[in-house]
Image (cartoon, rainbow, N blue to C red; front, top):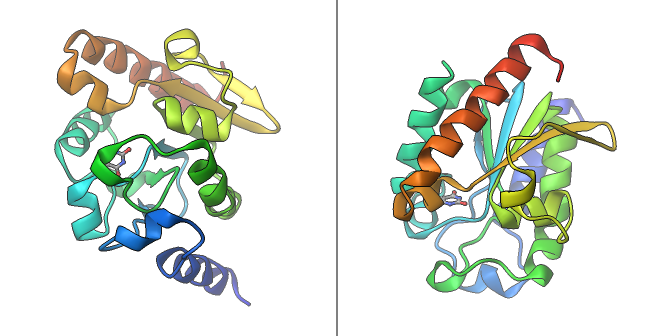
Length: 188
Ligand code: URA
């Protein structure tokens, strides 16, 4: 298989996956989108209602905020890859369970391995739990550049948190500046 075929096969597996119950109620799976050669990958929690309808990540209110945060560091959606820990919408927008995170994780790991981003911006506790471990909390490790098993990560709050707690917005903005500086200098 060519490199392109490997990616297409992975996308096919994601959109036809029935490994967990989240698949039962989906309109569309949301594999993620953006640059296929990204320096920066962002990983959110899981699709909400709008994402489920459109099959695209972060297209609702949290997505608009994410777009604005990217603009502040002079990046567009087309220049980064935006993905999620689970690819199907959890009912009533609840957080994915530990079991659902585990079930979907091989897809995320395969996407990371294929995309080879330089750094992953971990958005919120579900992504932190899936990628780094359930013992961590965003409020404790946010804004830090972590180097774990050969990959750089920068955890921060999920943009949706800033929609109902405005004080989170300035924290997100300063964390995105840390990301911008790291991307410019490629060092901590
Ligand atoms: N929230 C997420 O975590 N992911 C999306 O795709 C949309 C909202």
